[in-house]
Every structure is written in C-alpha cells, then in structure tokens.
Length: 82
Image 1: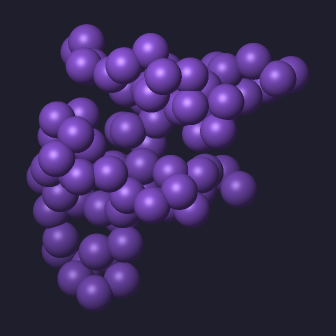
Image 2: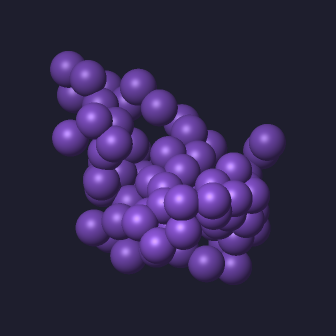
C-alpha cells in the first residue's frame, strides 16, 4: 500500500517512530502502522478472550493509513518486544 504521506511526515516517522537498528530504520511506515494496530487490538484480549483481534487490527490499520485517526506518540513508540 502506498501511503499518502508528505515528505515531512515520512521524515518525522523515520526520525521518531520507526524501529531502528544501528541508527537506521528497519521498518516502513506501513509496518509501523501494522505493528501499532496489532498492539492496540491485542489489548481487547484483556476484556474479551474471544475478541476478533485480526478484525480490530485491520480496522485500526485502515484508520491510521487513511489518516482518519492517529494514536498519540507514546502509542506509536511502543514495541511489542520491549
């Protein structure tokens, strides 16, 4: 998917939010949004063991990639392996 992000938005994502290794990004903005969508959706398991995590993740991903919703900075920075 080609995100409709300005050059400035891509620069901010790269400098602040994309996962890096040795100072270089190792994920794309699309991967960032997928990672965040998955993490947000996973929280539903705390309240509903039968929650449709994949469906919720897809919904959050669509909201972020369409730029209709963007979570706050701490949410964008959370890594699943941290």
